[in-house]
Every structure is written in structure tokens, then in C-alpha cells.
Image (cartoon, rainbow, N blue to C red):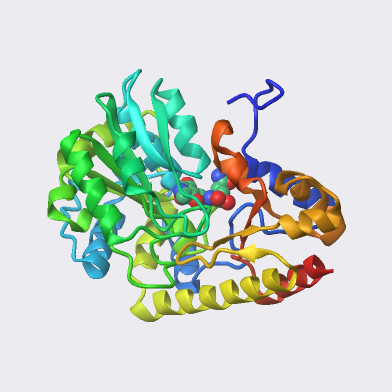
Length: 384
Ligand code: PMP
Ligand code: GLN
């Protein structure tokens, strides 16, 4: 967790939010919405706070939320879960991931994932004394090469981490990749942890968790949270679902991380998950509109974006902007853009292990979880 200068680091997301606060630039760096989630959910939180739901929740989570998560998995994916043994509530997906990794990894184990990848994977794998082995997602399609994926597995592989839809690229995994992961995981007897926090932000096709495949389900832990779907990243409520024998280990681990997530917010999250289909459809349409505003703005500014099929991020080749601002790469551009254009964005290299960063040196990630007028103004300034 040391940065290039050997100092204990903050996360790139927090650094970018501090930069935005200091300069007043629009924060398209750290991914969090600039509006509140559904009023029914906020009312349910207020009612729970005032209604005495203020003491420890059970370590596995409030029964009402575990039931709501099980019902959500049934309703959207046809996955049947026993809420008492196959759902554990966590403090955000962050704790869900940490507990899932720490429960199964031993020093010297290898964990296969794609790169770029979300920063927490590398940090927690390191906490466990294990080693991340990454398979590159390369432009223009950001899809893994099947042979590369196969070659990443070896005798020490203990786990695979998938993130679908994917942060930062906005790519989604196709059936052939999911099938291959399921096959390799079985062959190497691995646990698969799938991070699906963007499950409801999918612009093409329908999201289908790996756990829908019966052969994979017995070794798959599915992680999600309230943050993205219900615009409540500060609530720190998430969950892990999967087979009871695996979840017992996750639960035993998370007991000594957070103990339990905020009780009143768990109750409110249960109310949110039960919202009708119209809520989920409306969310997706809102995000599709914002995505299109950002894509049009980036094109007008001379950036070449990858059209995301999921998530609320766009990655774009900003080589032309680097030239216009007289800087060598996207990392340098991310440091001048706040003052020059009032925009904060994150260099994609922040998501990639050092030896593989070169291909992404002209790429920036922009978050579009902001109001369309905010996005339009920011893109107007970027185009200069
Ligand atoms: N996984 C991915 C891919 C993310 O982008 C994020 C954060 N936005 C998380 C996990 C963490 O989610 P949470 O805020 O629920 O801890
Ligand atoms: N997931 C968010 C992002 O990628 C950030 C979450 C965090 O700050 N850890 O922007």
C-alpha cells in the first residue's frame, strides 16, 4: 500500500475527490451519484432510525434484508437462495469482497483477475499474502483473450475474481468467457468471486450472473451492494450470496471486520430492493441518457471513447487532448484538467499493475453518474 514515493497511499478515488474539492472542478473521478436514491428508501431509513432499529444487527444481517436479497436474485435471475444460509450482509461490496478473499486465500495462493481492475482486489490479495495474476483487457474491445485466460491458471490458482459489468472499462463479459471461467475454475478447483455492483447498469443485453450456471454456482460467491443501484454509496451496505458452506467462511471472517453493517440502513435497503420493475427500468434509462451525453461531449472534445455496455464509466483515449494541453500522457493530463477545464477524471493506469501500464497511458476514465446538465457543462469546458 505504498505509493511510488514509498509513502502510505490513499486511494486514487479519494485523491481525485480531494483534487476536485480543492479546485472546484466537476468530479468525474470517484464514482458516486450527485442525487439521492429513491424517496421510498430514504423514508424507510428515517422510519428505521426513529423506530428503534439502532442496535447491532445479526452478523449475517437483518433477516428482512437477507430475504429481500434472496427475492431480488430470484426475481431478476431465477436464482433460488435460502435467506438463512445463502445470503450474508456486509458493509458495502468492499467488505463483501474483503471477507470473501480473506476467508479462502492462503499465503502463496494465486488469484486470477482481469486488468485494469478495481483497486481493492490488489490490496486485499496482498493482505492475504497471496498474488494477483492479471489477464489484460486491451483496447479496442477490452475483452480477454481466451488463451491468455487459460494460461493465467496454474497449480497455485485458488480463486478467480470477475467484475461484470466492469469498472473501469464498462465492458461486459460474454457467454463464452463466462463458460470458460466456469470450466477453468472447476478444473483448478477455485472459488470464483463475482463483483456485480453494476448489475442494473447494463445497456446492451441482459446481465446474467455466473451463479446462474448450475455447474459454477457451487463455487461462486456473488457480491453486490446498495451503492450504485440506489445511489447510496455512503450507506456502506452490501451482500454476498452463494452456497452455504462457502458463506459460512465469509460470515466467520466478516464477524471480525465490521461485525455488522448499519442496522437502520439494512432495513431501508430491504425496502429499496423491493421497488417495482419501473424503478429499475427508470434508473437504466437515466443512465443511458447520461452515458450518451458524456459520449457526445467526449467526441466533441476530440477524445476517442469506448462505448460502455455497462457500469457508469467511460474510458477514452485522450491522446489528442494531451497534445493540445502539452502533456505527455493521461496521468499528466488528469493533473492539469481540473484547472484548465474544470474536470477531474482518473488515469486508467491507476487500475493497472505497473509493468502493464504502457498501453493505457493515453486513457482516462470519466464517471457519468452526474446530472446531465453537469455533464454537458463539463464536456463543454473540455472541448474548450
Ligand atoms: N467493486 C467495484 C467494481 C466498484 O466500482 C466499487 C465501488 N464503487 C466497489 C466494488 C465497492 O462498492 P461498495 O461501495 O458497495 O463498497
Ligand atoms: N467504485 C468507485 C470508483 O471506481 C470508488 C469507490 C471508492 O472510492 N473506493 O470510482
